[in-house]
Image 1 (tube, one colour):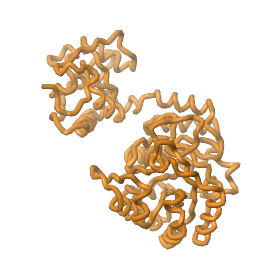
Image 2 (image 1 turned 60 degrees about the horizontal axis):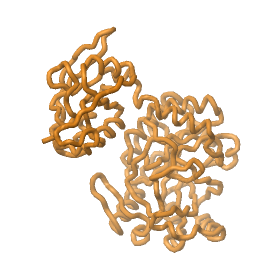
Image 3 (image 1 turned 135 degrees about the vertical axis):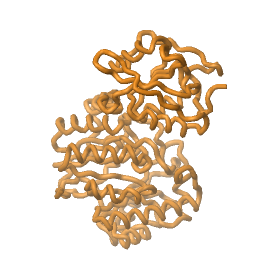
Image 4 (image 1 turned 180 degrees about the vertical axis):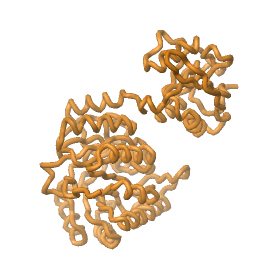
Length: 422
């Protein structure tokens, strides 16, 4: 498919007032901790990476995108830039890109990432015709990088200091090589941090040029309160000019960056309007998955008539499907064995992959959140299974659902450590 790459406003200053972009906030988790970043809060008046009014599932994001394009036909680019890192949320990111490509075949697609987990996705990114990828590279020498990053998490292993910075740079370098081998346009974002990497900009730019990067964007650090680097002053205008002049000897520069939010929409520099905030909130309130792809409801029951088991106690779950006006028990499925913490609940989400809801007498906050992110609504109730199924399939709330205390006495406040109740 031939795409018009000139329509990307971030990569072509000449069209920034003609074409817009939309960021779909589907990637909440991050696999590194930068010493200048805090994603724990959101302010609608704040424009910086890592901030969003809502986090969406891929299908919610598609619905939001469809409405946004109808409202603003200037949108030519769909990007995923957080609020965490897209490649720390690989399934959500790739699913969103697939859905966008299927429904908007002429749309430009781009991703902004730290690059830690990017290389394994290079093939599919190219197959999806993701035309632009931005990597944030703040150091190519680990002895400098150790001051930028608090930790780097690779799978379940956390690396700190020089070791973490070295791992991140190694992965970034390989990612750039993989992308350029597939003719993907690569932009480098470098955060200018006074006293940390301000004397390192030339080395970064030269290294990026040698790897084949296409563009460099030198961005002044935005000091965020209560972060390790939050007390540093924001770079002065002259420091930014000097850094860009130095970097510009090696690569073309982007001069019009607006440090976009993870939910930015419209032309560069436009703030998040009340209408856009409302659209985001409405999208976030929709089902995480289309109900037609989730035709079943699971039930934690001891005898097959009542919803009367705590999730941690259930060893098997009854799975029902609606047939006309009746509910049919299609099978019972074994629940993952106790232990393993959150991994147990992720396994349960896989077991219930075709279920839109799970009826239980009680459940802890941890499994409820894991299952919610997997598209499964946990309904806590006691009573007849049929009453719960009617509400679950209709998508409505139960009338005065009753909750009980389970054996450990924690009730719905149970943390759900995956060990079951004793």
